[in-house]
Image 1 (cartoon, rainbow, N blue to C red):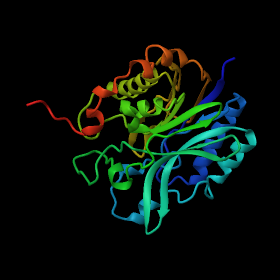
Image 2 (image 1 turned 120 degrees about the vertical axis):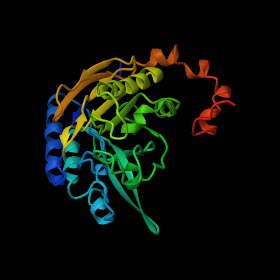
Image 3 (image 1 turned 180 degrees about the horizontal axis):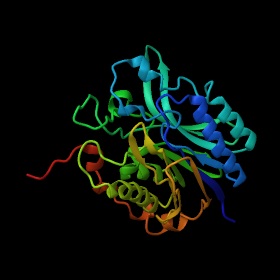
Length: 311
C-alpha cells in the first residue's frame, strides 16, 4: 500500500511594497480554497511570502526593515491562514522574515515553518546559504542585501515527521548547494519543500537570461534524484516593484522529473499525488548511502570553505 500525499505548490505573483499583509493573506487563502477543492493535504507557499522581496532595497533605517518581519507566528494578520487551513484539514509550509527575541538582543532570519493539518507548527528552518552582499553596491540595477538584513540560519537542516512521511525544508539559494539535500537525505527525508524569489537577471554579473530558469530547475532536479526525494519548489513570480522574477514553480519526483509546473507568473496552484514510497528504490540501489558512500574521502567538504588549488 502506497503512502500518497496530495501536495499543492501555491505560487504567488508580485507583492507590492505597500501591499498590506491582510491582502496577501487573502490571496493565500484563495489558493488554499483551490487546494481544498483539489483534495490537497499540504500546501507550500514561497520564500518571504507575506511581503515584497525587501532585500532589493538599501536602507539604514532598521525600523523600516523590521516592518517586513514577523515578531510572532501566527500573528494578527496570519492567524486567519492558520485557522482556515485547520478548518479545512490542510497543512502548509510558509516562508517569512522572522524577528526572534532572545535575551539581550533581536535576531533576524529568513525562515520557513511547517504547519500540520490542525494548525500546529511542527517544524522550523532558517536559511543557511544567504546570497548577495552586505553593503550598498551602486553599480547594481537593484540590491540583494540578504547578508545585511538576515543572520545565517542556526538550526542546520532538520527533518520532521508529518503528513505520513519525513519532511524537510530549505529556502531559495539553498537549492543550489548539494549539501542541502544530502544532509537531509542522511536523515531519511522523503519530501523537501523549497520557496524562492529569483530575479530574471543576475544583478552581480552578466548571465544569459535562459540560464536562470535552467539552473533553477537543474539544481532542484539533481537534488531530488541524487537523494531519491520529492522536491516542491515554489516561487514568488512576475514583475515586482520593477524587478522580474522567474517563476517556474514545480513539483519534482524522486527520479528528477518535473511532474507538474506552473504556466504563469501570477497566483497559481499546481498539484500532484506524491507517492512517498516512490523514491525508495533509488535510495535502495543507485543512491544506497550505507552501501556506497565513502566518507573517508569527503573530508574537504567540512574542513575547507573556499577553493584552494594545488601548488
